[in-house]
Length: 262
Image (cartoon, rainbow, N blue to C red; front, side, top):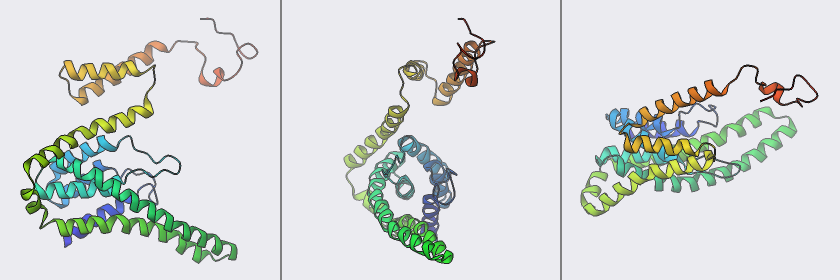
């Protein structure tokens, strides 16, 4: 019971990130999965699962009125069930993604309900009832907290004693399939991120990074460090003395300041 309460608390606090805490990144899988691993006594496995989940969801963002999959609920429940079952990172990914999609619908429902309290806050504001406005503003984050904490609590409480038996009774080909599918999900996350960041001017660097990782046998950290060095070198060699600054480039060089000849 205590473990389930702690898992629910972690999920509830995580969903409040970017809502009442500002952008603290506490709600990212890389943080929440580690905390879940610490609570369950497997911090290293929590770090591994959190890193993989971060790759899956690193390109997700709520643009405009869209609601992305709830990576907080999915990440916490996926990490919890994977650690309790002892089936590894692949199963964690396969569980976390569909749970996140299901929790997305619950998040939309909470947002619809919160519209009522926003209208009530407007009514209190017109009457000058600041206490009523304060109460109406605190109810939505409480509902967000409960919408994540309760599913995580129930999944941990009900799954702790049954998940291992369920996994043992599941045919091995299903587990293997989930593992393969889970291992492919980070590629989907990178594809979503590249879809946002892709530019014809920088595409060659993405290809270069892939070639280094594929043929030089260097891990991701090494590729990132090489990329940082290349970026610094390009910055040093493309900056020239006397080049127009950002401020001066915004004005017409034919009428203000000196004309810079290439």
